[in-house]
Length: 226
Picture 1 (cartoon, rainbow, N blue to C red):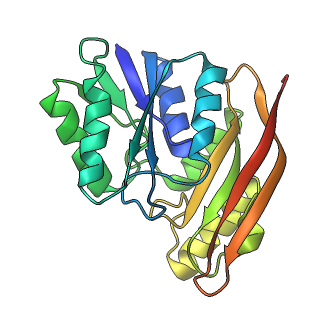
Picture 2: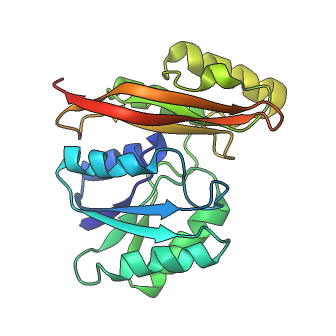
């Protein structure tokens, strides 16, 4: 099938696209650029780098801006999907456990006679992260929004030690191992679909101690051979 992948730049959307690409053709990347850091639907940190990721995959990018207002932002997503009428058969997303997100995307796809594909839906969180590491995904954390997570997580690379820490944080504090509730945002620097990997040359940590949240804002990158 011909698919469009809804990509945020983070691990869930790109790993879902990678899994779907084993059986289907990813014809387009859809990126929704939200002006609202607290968007219910769409990832915010470093969303500008999706353009680079799409280029590294050699896949055309459909970019749509939204004010990020609850429910209204779905209209912007639907407009982007409608642009591809007749060119795709379905949409793949990185939905894991959020019924809010999945039900709304399912509804949009149904209205346009498209399949909604979610390869990660209800997959065991820790098992999924380990699978992504085995499949050579290089992932860093670029957003934090839940105590006791702190600024040390910003820019941190996902590895087995991090997974074990996240399992413990889930046990003690209820934090999602995969950050499904918005506790953690990620960025993919490399994966099998990229022809080169992203190297960060300059980034800034922005941390709000009072709110206990922050972002890792990437200012300069270069593309390097694998």
